[in-house]
Amino acid sequence: MSDTLVLLDHTAAGALRTPVRELVTLARSLGGAVTAAWAVDGAEPGAQTLAELGALGVTQVYRLTSDADLHATAVLAEGVAGLLEATGARTLLATSSFENKEVAAHLAVTTGAGVVTDADTLERVDGTLVAGKTVFAGTWSTRCAVRAPLAVVLVKANSVVATDAEAPVEPQVTEHAFTASPSASRVRVVERTERPATGRPDLGSATIVVTGGRGTEGDFTPLEELADVLGAAVGATRVATDEGWIGHDAQIGQTGITVSPRLYIGAGVSGAVHHRGGMQASGTIVAINSDPDAPIFEIADYGIVGDLTTVVPQLTAELRRLKG
Image (cartoon, rainbow, N blue to C red; front, side, top):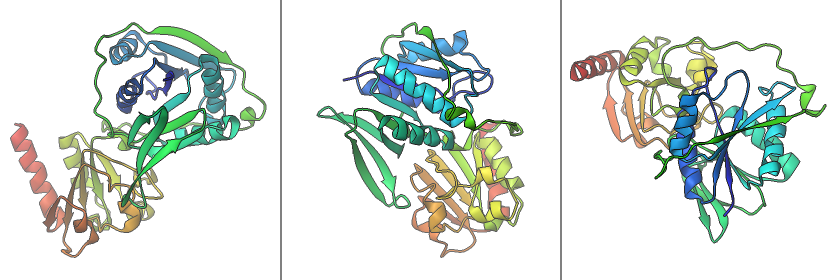
């Protein structure tokens, strides 16, 4: 057994993102102490956040600070590498996001770590860390043994049922400051544009996702209304983003975001293989399409053959009625 370090994803306001609870739950199952790294990029871990981490069993929180911008993944990776060396933790867990995948790649090059991305299970087998993940558009389940001394595992959201520790602890907060190397500082973030707030959850970590495709013909309004009733995120297929109907940050698929929500609702989505590769691991899949031969019905748990402009508003109205 060795200690596990969890990289904490948080909002600009200092609130933990939902998948962090899953990461810490998974870290506890590996044995050893669970510590956490908080990249200080303006937001600080407040008393409420520390209490939440303590309830999850995190014993130590390291405030990661630098003279360079921690939004640059090379800088963040350098800081995390130094923290891993300083603490002796042999496992790093983080959410499987675009940014963290870049951090993991830097760590693999600089430390020789074994990296697994998009993992959905993790366990120790005879002292070896073994991660499970789906590949080839969700059609194969694999198990990856990390034999390097340092393991970096990025976990998909909604892979673990988050639970609190048996007994809460009071995390100790420690400063870990570092000076970024010239090579890490060569890339600078010169501008950041915040996405407009929608009140909906982040697409990559949402437990419910409502997705639109070509069948929407550019009108995502019915899907957004359904998403708001369900507390869901809104996603899209590649064709919908290419047409400019919705932003590219909503694209789900092999060249977009990979999601694994508890519930996926696809409206006007044909189910092309590159889209299925990004959502096939969803818990329950509901498909709404006017074409009874659409490939999405092959993997759907529930299918509705019909016009989404009729079906989706009826579904939204009934859900509103049931919720009172």
